[in-house]
Length: 221
Image 1 (tube, rainbow, N blue to C red):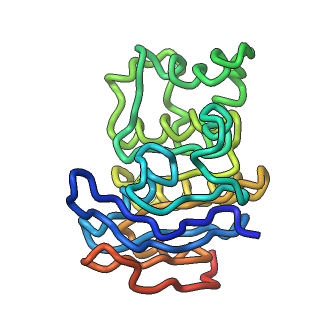
Image 2 (cartoon, helix red, strand yellow):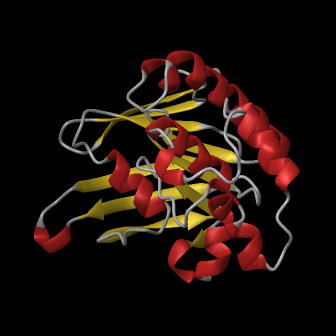
């Protein structure tokens, strides 16, 4: 059974068609990349899977249950979306990383925060560091770490390495695949980087007219 099923999906706000007739499925741990030219609807699809945009037609199933019928809080625990542009708040790195624990009434685990930061090449970042002093690439990785404290079933990644050099990108993906396997997380990502696309077990190619051109299976990580 598929973990995610996308059926006859379209998005046409105010009658303007952005994507149409999108169908694909993702099995558990079938790490999948969506690629295509700029404007082909990649981020729109990812945001609909994340329940950040409502489809005009069609539906999305998670574990064979319609997305629209799942309690929003429960859905957010199962499906987590990491933005291309980091969504940081408060004043410090700790403000961002402790948020998930605070809303659950748990204690913030600083040792885990340090472990994840170190693994992503941020060993030089202090938890009390002002977020406004971070570079774009540092903000991207801090935003990613925030999503890892309570591992979801599905982690959606929207161009999260766009501000990183090649060595740091490789380190990030090595960590992510290992983390996903340890915590039984399915990854679904967008990237213009051909190396990152090639790491997918399933590659969904979109055409310029915002439809699926082809789906390539059995790609190796």
